[in-house]
Amino acid sequence: MSSDSDIAIKVENLSKCYQIYDQPHDRLKQFLVKGRKFYREFWALNDVSFEIRKGETVGIIGRNGSGKSTLLQMICGTLNPTSGSVQTHGRIAALLELGSGFNPEFTGRENIYMNAAVLGLSTEETDARYDRIVEFADIGSFIEQPVKTYSSGMMVRLAFSVAIHVEPDILIVDEALSVGDAYFQAKCAKMIQGIIAAGSTVLFVSHDTASVKSLCSRALLLESGRSQYLGDVNTAVEKYYSALIESQRVDRGPEEAVKQTAAVASEYTDGVESFQSMASFQRIQNGVAEFINVALLNESGQMIDVVDFGQTVVLRQVVQVHKSVPSLGLAYHIRDKNGQDIIYSDTGIEGNRHLVDVEAGSVHVIEWRFTAHLREGHYSVSSMLAEPVNLNIGEVVVADFVPISTKFSLSSAGHPQIYGAAYWSNKVSMREIKNGTD
Image 1 (cartoon, rainbow, N blue to C red):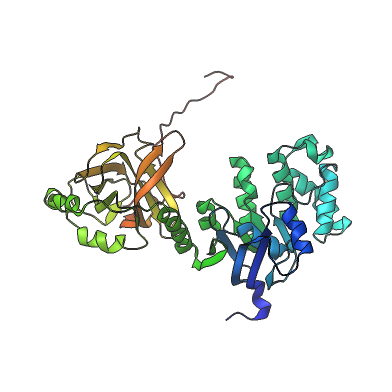
Image 2: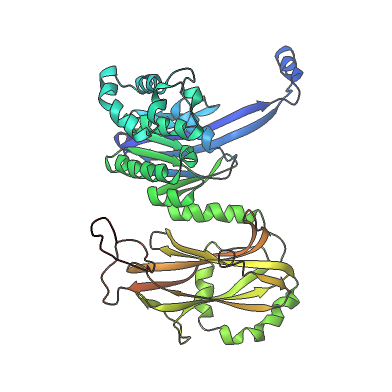
């Protein structure tokens, strides 16, 4: 149990209710007529409680409308709760929405000093940080122009730069980085890691679960304004995906189709007991089709659980179809021991090689052959089966998602240890330049 001195944020039974009026004149009726309700109640947040320790980095995830932004606004004090309480300890810097806290008529320079003052810095302290703020934002001469002339990317660059350079005790980021380019996002991630290392508390809200996994040790999952889970970040992310996929669930097909597949798939049953045991963890299915076995093989077709660096292996997925559908796409993720996605591929990426015109009762074997150029360590493989709805935008309906379908360890096999998470093959050319010519 943490002592009060260790707590950065404490939320107790926090709720927020909005009154929704169907007609504008209903507001007047509510004011004039006592004892009747002319509105509907909408609980954006309902009885949420948690504690965040000083120096901890916690992610908040959930679908749109789950209450994430409402919760952050109440933590920052920009929104009053209907009931419950919030306690915070230390200076808070928050990026709640694009351009929040900026005066559009002020220049970038003027907004830096205004925001820094709101966050508790003196003019002298802002002077000392000003050059670093401007350098990180990297918006050039626009720093002397009114903020109303800025693009969305420039706005968030400046807002984020101010927030991180005030050296906050608590940093709150709500999806603000999603508008930045890849280079800026990489810079932000590096700065957030520095803030974490310095001992600040970070509350991070994003739909980018890879970022949440890489930055956070714990995560809070919200659903319809209620807390569904608070704990290990990998478990929270899996529960988040499970909830998304659960909403697409349909009924399973005829049992006859299931029975017809047993004999057909018998030659691919090696290791099926191990697969079924692992697959039960947070698996989501909708009854259209399912994996009945997934295994990792060497080139001779033997099951393996230890792979050498540079070894070519085969990931075999056996699929059983319960309902006839126009097409099915497949995918796999290779994840490290911390649940980070290291390798990903799907049949769309591999040239739209989906299963097409699949019939109920059919069984399909899909084999992915690749060379394991990974850092030494332990890995798990996730498998996914989906109906492509709109290939142009990547929209799918998930039929079967198995977070852990098989696992393996990778040995360096005498090779020098690589420094990155993975290696890919390169073609290297070298030439000497003399007197300015090749």
